[in-house]
Image (cartoon, rainbow, N blue to C red; front, side, top):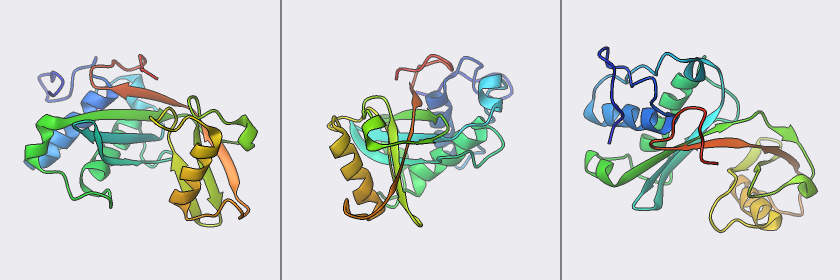
Length: 188
């Protein structure tokens, strides 16, 4: 269900990031223009984010940025919502008949910082592993990822790296928003 819109078509000022991402996806599926983000400091600031889509509880798309690629968070969310719905290479493009079964969440990322594996906590920190141009990312607090070893293992696999190779580790935190969560009131 889309968030209530203002008379100018803009999602309501109390709309959370996941509600805005859903409104963008619904517009894209319908071939309509993407609504502008609410005109609030939350959306006009810059931040990286991931948009995750689940269909009946199973991953349906997840795309994001580790550093802001757009001039503001509203455009960052719209960009990543489009990519998660239509450009995640693991899934076919989203169809209109899937919208009713779709749930959307948005993770707004803190800047990453270098760390040692001992500094990680998979419930609190996301992880980035990198060696040269190969990079793997894993968001925090994911079901089934409850040890640092498993978190690093999955991130290394995503990067195509062996645990025996030299690699750098960075961590970041997220504010996770689900549909219905207001800006600044995340659930994670």
